[in-house]
Length: 139
Image (tube, rainbow, N blue to C red):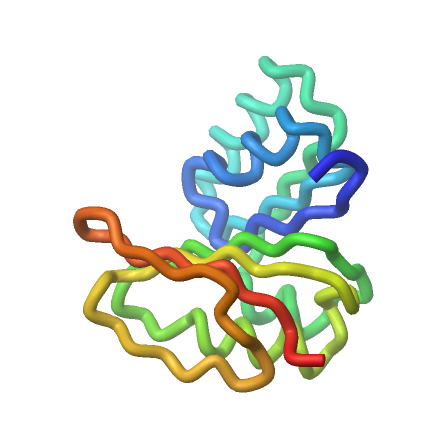
């Protein structure tokens, strides 16, 4: 993680992005659509003096469709039941947003079976009501 560029898509509380920042990420972009959550993230970044964190208030898929940035690590923890992980993965690969040696950490509801076109699962487990996966692009 040290020196990496990270994207916390669907940031919510920012737990994943702030953790990346605390572990030495060079840059963390947090994308959150909800105004109140985005404002809370901004306040928290200020309190933590996390200058490497940038908060973007936007719809995640629309932001992915227009960004020119690339990332080493992408965190996907969208609202459960919204079907956003497969669509987000498609855009990460299709628009070359994920760097060649990049990784994706995704969380979803445990009963969700997903087709990961363009990715292989490096690790997968379930904890309580959450399924998590570490994915890397198929080379």
